[in-house]
Length: 219
Length: 173
Image (cartoon, rainbow over all chains, first blue to last red; front, side):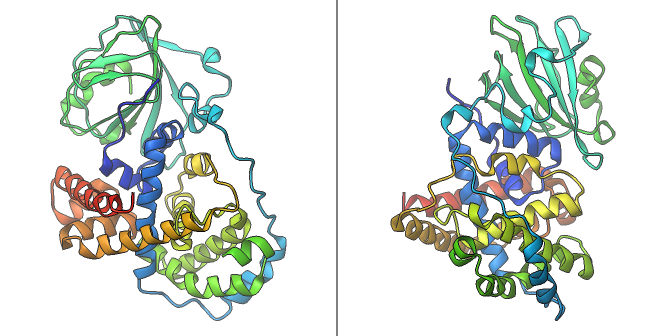
């Protein structure tokens, strides 16, 4: 299985800087967990953060700051170096950042049917998050109606695959779409396609296009 | 950094604190925190550095880059009140062996220097967008409205900046 679709480089830069909203950051992390190429690129982009930290004008700390911090060192429980993770942990069907959000496995999900062939299951995000994470399970052959997006949208395939005008998306592939894009995905795998979609919170949808998919899938 | 990780050397920690504490505080203030909170967060970052020192892999990037990632995660948790767990989940994937070869470390230092050069050479409009993102913690949409630019322009400036970085790094690949 080969990952073909990666995040836009602007998305990767925002992820490295730490300013993607939680739902989007979770999906990018889940993609990186199984994508060596993006993992390597992320490390290079994080160097930018280091270089900028070196050039920022320092803000002096209060005189007591160092003493106070030193006095707290003894109470810190030091993290042990974990055993190196082997490639077995690269599982696009169950990347760690998502697995943590699911109580059981993929088979234990209480799906809610929202349209013929389409069911969904919400994943939790922090209260302050302005993005939403929704798992979708779409039956083979189902055509999702042509739709646009009200804002940024990321889709990570977990199982099965779908096709649209941007190509074929299988496990580990990430579709990085912005508000100007309209597409009509069709599930082309013999099994259902399970994917996770990160969208901006509904209040942020700005135009009618964004509402087209909403009533159908409710995301 | 080695001395902190291997020997839990307090003097070495003190040096890192004096060198980075005020920069982390400045980073937090530029991200929208007031001075008191920023100092608190800077202390937090330094304590996390002490706690995670064993996980630092010199062949992956300089101490600055590593400290930036700790500060970034503290910023997400405490300023944004969101979760930095997704970042932690993938942080230790494929952790290299503790004794990274000297060559890898040298190469990594060289890459850092190239990244610094690439940043310095960026056209001002691209550099600005990169700084707003990394230093001021502004999402693309906020940068777009602050600069009164279409979102697509912000994205393309980021892509261009990234492409220059890649081009620079290709030389050592």
